[in-house]
Length: 352
Ligand SMILES: [Zn+2]
Image (cartoon, rainbow, N blue to C red; front, side, top):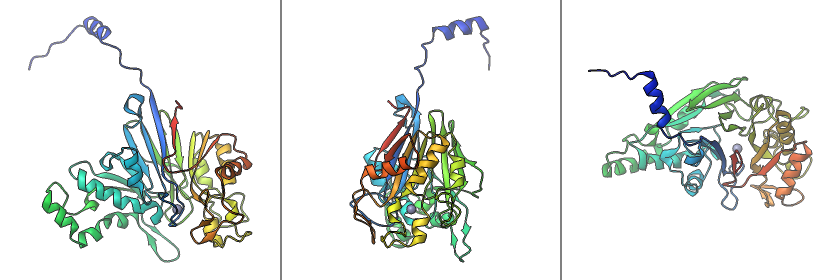
């Protein structure tokens, strides 16, 4: 093969004649795909999940699509955003509670049905976490067996017979599992195209982890159901010291929230350990203020706004309003913007 070497001056002249690329304007979208707390059901609210999209303004900030937790109804919410199951780049799970994971079954089945020929889905979560109580929480097993009921029913084989592009092993074959050992220091566990995701150990149940996404348009922390390492008072705060470390300098904190009204000194009936293993809204406001966050997105609300009961537990004093939650975060000293989560609430950085 012959090579033609152009003189540098000619190259410079050609470069000058080329049209300038459009001004790059990276942006970030944080969308709550579900805001329900725990396995309880209420009025169609979806289970916990947060979609983080990042990209150029010209691509609707959506070149990269990362899903954090996938509770009940996640796929329905994603469909309302016109996000197809095959377009999700990675799913990150904070812990193995069904209100954070059951939507992954639906998401993977949909991806298996229509995108079996596409890329495997990165599923990122903790490595097996043995509990001192004698059981082990295993994201690896959850994912390995995620399609078993549909394999056993014969549906997988039946659908493969109709379309040979579908993977014979069912949705589990479409997963690229990435596990990590959560530690007390942030560690980068996933990255792509200038976007980095870090994880840190946090307390809720064994294997719980919290995440931080760093992008050129800003950083967002997904606390999950994190709470303080001390299981109950006396403790300085109900929030996690590790999440606070992870959140230093982040613009946005998305966090599961318990309202103090459900506490054992009232008559909600909620068992104290269930109450104590979540972060309280005022403490989240205080933490968000300490780390300098501009936005606090309260999600996984216990109780839901407008609800007189949270599952079997009553809301003492009657239903809470959005203003009650905002006031609680402000009572903790937060001077930024509190977003009281509802399904599909979206925050854009930079703001438009
Ligand atoms: Zn939860």
